[in-house]
Image (cartoon, rainbow, N blue to C red; front, side, top):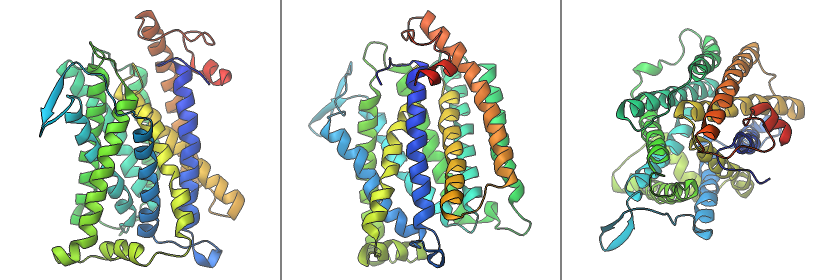
Length: 378
C-alpha cells in the first residue's frame, strides 16, 4: 500500500513484512535442523548455513543490480584506480564488509556449546546496547541533533529485561563463555562489526540530506553488493585454507563437505533459506528509518524479531508438536509488550515533532501518525 516516507504507517508496514519474513526464516531453520528420528531433514548447522546463505545473499544482491539501486545522488565524486564514484561509497562499502562478518559469526555462535536461546540473547542484547551507544556518540559529535526520548530509554531497559529473563536458564557448570578464546573472538567480531555497521548507517542517515538526497535503497544496494563480494572471497579462502595454510577445524571440514558432497534435499534448504535474504530488505530499512534515533530503530528491529521467534515456537508446537514456550518465554514476551508500549509513546511524540518540522508529511489516515491508528489503517 502506498505510504509517505517517514510516517508511522510506513514503519508499521516494514515491521509487518519483517515479522512475516522472519517467521518463515525461523520456522525453516527449526524444520531443517530438526532430528531425523522425528521426521525432519536433520541438516547440520553448517550445512544449512551454506545452502541458505548462498541463496539468501543472492536475493538482495541481484535485486539491487537488476533495479540499479546502486545509483546514488551525491555532492562529491571521488576517483580511485581510474574509477569515479560517490564519496559515500568510501564508508558504505566497509559497512558491507562488516555485514559479511556478521552473517557467518551469527551462525558460528550457534555452533558453540551453548543453547541457541542463549546465543540469541547475547546477540540481540548486544545490538540494543550498541544502538543506544551509537546515539550517545553521535549526539556528542553533533551528528545527531535529535534527543533520545525518556520513553526510548525506558523501552531499552524493558527490552534488556526481556532478554535477561532467559539468562536464568543457564545452569551452573555450563560452558564458560568468557574464558573460551574461540567464543570471545566470534562474539567480539560480531559486536565490533555490528557497532561499525550501525554507526555508518546512522552517519549516512543523519548527515546525508543536507544538500543531497538521502537514498536508503542506494545505501542498501552498495552495502549488499560489497557484502556479497566480501563473503564470497572469504568463503573461497576458507574452502582452500587446508591446502593453502594447513588450517584444520571441524567447522572448516563441515563447510567443505557441504559443498563437495551436498546433502539430499539441499535445493529445498536453499529455497527456504532464501527467506533470510528477504528479511535483509526490511531489516536495513527499519534500521535506517527516516527521522528516528538508532535507539528507536534498533529496538523496533530486535523486538520484532523476538516476537517473531516466540511466534515460530508456537507454530512449531501446533504443527509438529515441538516444545511449548516456557514460562521464561511468556515473561519475556510481557517485558517486550511493555517495551513496545513505551516505543509507541515515543513514536507518537516523534511523528508529531517531524510533521511540525516538515521533515515528513502528515499521514492523512492517522492523527499525528498515531501508531495504533496506523495499524488499523493497514
